[in-house]
Image 1 (cartoon, rainbow, N blue to C red):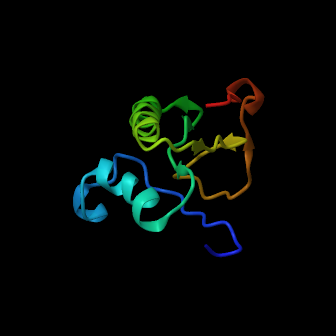
Image 2: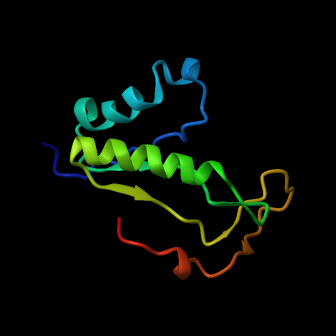
Length: 105
């Protein structure tokens, strides 16, 4: 085992199977079984353009079930600003306080 933490942040479940090279469940399991990372972590933001991303909860449920099956904790990072994918400005736009999203999973 290396003396540094291995950290890979997975794609969200909406990424096509062709890009992942396998189905989403196998892709997520490989992080633990092949890479040996001691936790799961993925990108899928709850707020996009100031609106709730409904796919956020679907991804949360998928990764939670896989994490339970693998007996592995998972991380979901909540951004502290609104994601504006079509914005030309790179300045952060403050979102609602992320503290209300904080949870131990």
